[in-house]
Length: 633
Image (cartoon, rainbow, N blue to C red):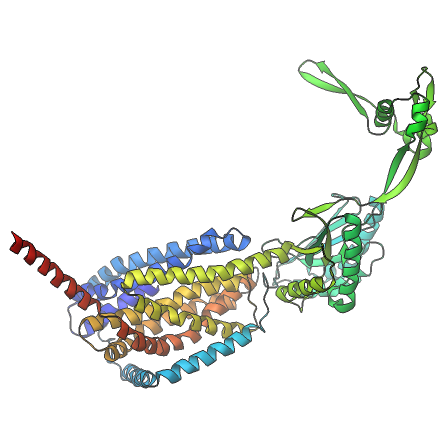
């Protein structure tokens, strides 16, 4: 509704000056036409670079930005077409213009005097603004930084991995112990359902999904339940469980904490390095819990070792040994039997009872050189060894994954930086650390969002310079944006929220909203300069005239953010993050808009001539050109 407020207020101001209704609608909308178009272009331009982000953050920004840009374009069209028509045809209450109210007149005149003081003491205002921004930078270092805020999604997940080689029956007993831990919460009415999956991916894996009841029907939050059951799950012998909550982007790994991988040349050496690294983590940072290394060379495997010299002496071809073992253990696909339009495979395979034990190898025979049957036990023997169940690769290198718990008291940024610094100290040359899952997405998002801010700032600056036809006016508008972001940092710090993907969305939107209010001031000051006013008189008069629409749009935007702040239930954390940035950031930043922008305009506008002077110069040059052309003929 911002554009409609600006147009409606200016038409009403013109009517209060004695202009007829229809004329006021035309003149009033014409005066703010450029400002409305400029603010719309700025808000749309802010989200242009976001559309090209390839990450998960880019998808969120793209959807949000597309909806916002479309809404702003439609609202500006309505404000410039429907609002003037309605103001011209619908009757309005008498009065309501500037200075008709004693209270309103006092506010406007008081602001004018304050503005005069700020312009006279411009260096003091700039110094205070810089000090405020420096404080915001210092506070920013103490604000938690994470990919997503801690969310109550109404769902808890539990993951447990037992030793390699254990059967489903063992893991089923472990799952029953986990369900017993959850039983009291089910009796309290916090849990709605429990879904347990045993052995679906591997026989030694248990995965549980606990759906909680509606937020209004339970006594404990998702985070409180996780904090209570986490020690009990970790104490289960054989297959300790890890409880974690799902997030809105489903980026948490199986362990629900921080996932990383140690890379190197060979798995055996990587395993040694990973063991040393996890011991160091446990010793220095016990809050990360007990790290779990995915590479465990404990899965039993039977290896058939063939005595090639003995086989050659007996005249047994190696291919025959291979085919016999394949038929006995896995089956040998011989041919296909075509029955009608179906091809039925014919598989040669020994019965299970003949190869149930390693000693059954003596029951297998192959033909030797003279056609005699030779027992495989005379040319081969079986050894049992432990191997890893799976081998991973990351960044095109051999890797071993490590899962750690993410403490509730530690933000993602601090955890990532802590582990990265420890890896630099502990990992030998030739080994590297790669973050996975949510930690990896956080790193990518942090880098891309920083680039997004810079690109958005430059695009908005170029758009404003093209619209104002003056780089000076565009620079004045954009110089207040960093101070507005500092105001948003104050809001985030005071409310105890974190810098996350949702608050970053609010910060990007704040760039456009902050520029919008400054445009209203600068554009009207340029109009007054075109009419012959001095720079100081132009900016003071512009401030007094634009004070009311700026405050009206501020109030509408700030109160529009209240539902985001006050919301509860599903997804409330995301809405709170955006709401506090807009509510607090815009509410505090209006001070910079009303007092710093005029000071900057007063200092910089002297370097640019009024647009009317440039137009008159162009007309004179055209007249001279036509006159010289006529004279030559």
